[in-house]
Length: 115
Image (cartoon, rainbow, N blue to C red; front, side):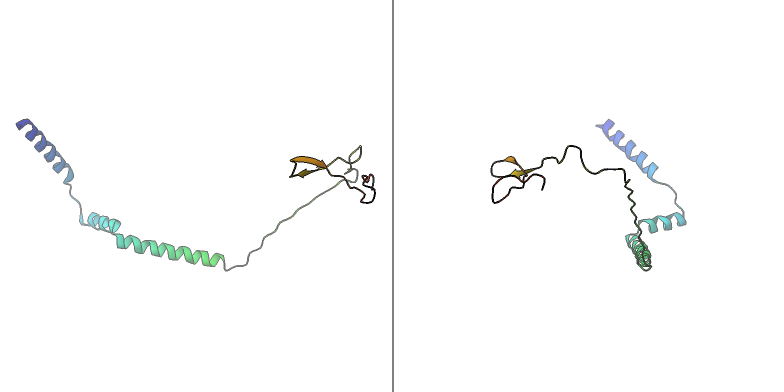
């Protein structure tokens, strides 16, 4: 029991010696200001007001945006495919299949080709 008590007292005395340090008055003031919540809140309010003022002045001046596009198409380029038109299909939701996209003559029911 004496050993445990002596170890506890030794540890307590070492921490007490470590925690005691001399601080000047200026250091005390600096620590008090750094840890003062009211001071920090006021400092943050000033910073917010400064940023709001800057944001207001950025919207004060008019804005100008420019965009441009350029497209060059050679006259030698052909936009048609050799062999005619490619077939297209429409999706039939009832059957789940693709139906050919063909123009049909309503009178005869035959497809219109080359119309």
